[in-house]
Image (cartoon, rainbow, N blue to C red; front, side, top):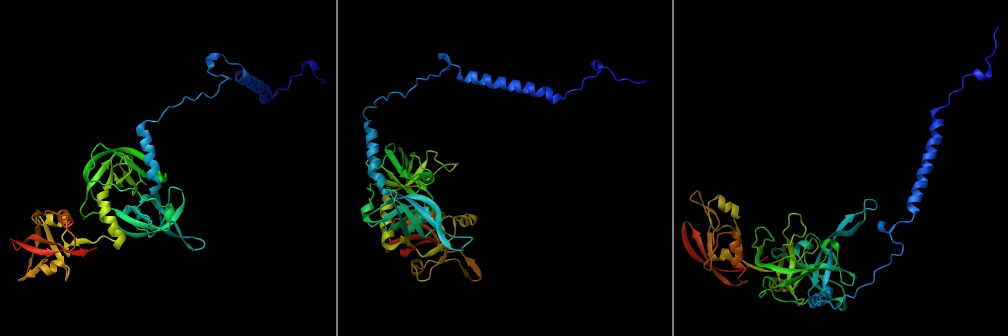
Length: 386
């Protein structure tokens, strides 16, 4: 016979663990929320640093600006309207409509040269483009086009269609009497930040800067520690009177940013080159009408000087009887080697270019040449070359 177990002796059913933990977790969360609220809203003692009565400080009057500060402010006010932001325009085809449109392809700086709208900048700023936009100090934008350039001096000239009423030409100084230690001021558009003023001093003079390989370096280049960064190229370097003393062109820096060593083309060189570009679109240089062997080739042959490689028919050297390498009695004979120009020794192509740059088209110079192991003098009337 069976019988049911009395109810008091039945085994209780076990509860799931989650049912036990859930109330505990909820209670803990409630306690934490209450604790955080009490901590956040509980009044703080003075040692906490918080003060509900805090208010802005009273401004202390600054007094008069220093005289050098006033001078710098006035210099910027006077010179900055002459500085422009140059945007080089390139062509790009829309991938959907196939329409060709102009797009920005690079930027740089420049300055207004005259009331006719001529803008001076670096050759490397405008290189590879035909059309440009300039932004004036009043933030108005105008089209500009190329007039000409002189790559060897890293100079170029644009002209803008901006009205004369908006153009303020820069004051031009001289670089002949500059002194190391005098103040220098650069205005430009570094990293696209237009109308940026940096200050410094002239760190050194008579530096040399190679703008184009195989051509003579730009001499008497100004070194400054006024900050020059990418985008400053083509902008003016000014003296403390706000006069143009150079065109900022390059920096010496492993990172490509300002390292306190910047270079500017001296204004006396600019003042010589720019008018010629405006007149003719290019600079006509005096030359001999020859092609020469490169310096490494001369070193490989163990020779010093500059050897004539080719003579332009009808040119100055051809008329003077200079000879390139030629075959004589079945053997190659070296071309004439230029050893001096007007008694100035010539040891490299740079020496030759530098000697010729002292003259103008139509001048007659005396060349000391080595021909078939004999030295002799030849007179050449310099011709115009591009």
